[in-house]
Length: 131
Image 1 (cartoon, one colour):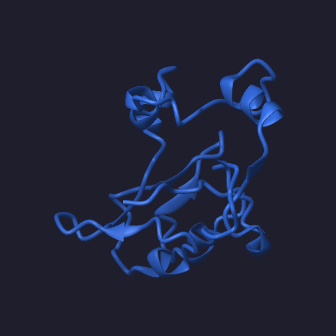
Image 2 (tube, rainbow, N blue to C red):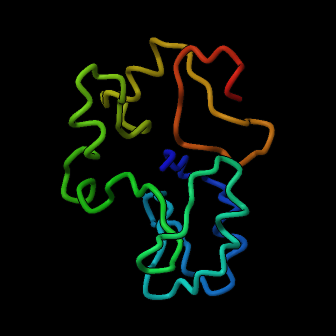
């Protein structure tokens, strides 16, 4: 699956008729599998193609930033195991976080900025082709 952008203004949350898709207090967009009715509205609403219907549960699913790890102070698994260090994770509000340092030193962009979803995933040195 594609990486969820964990938008500050997520269209997927707005369209969920039962509130199964929600944003946590710390800004991570999640799906409560117990409430999801599998209507697929959130899948259609995601402009990044990051959502899918789990064939086993028939509920919406997506990247969670490994929220179960992050709340315990660990890195998302994809960041931890990346052999080249291409993925950086952190809190932009903490100037000393790896992500805050990276964004200060590198030109970063978000995907589809014109949609005003305010994605929280940043890409270094985009050439405009994937936008």
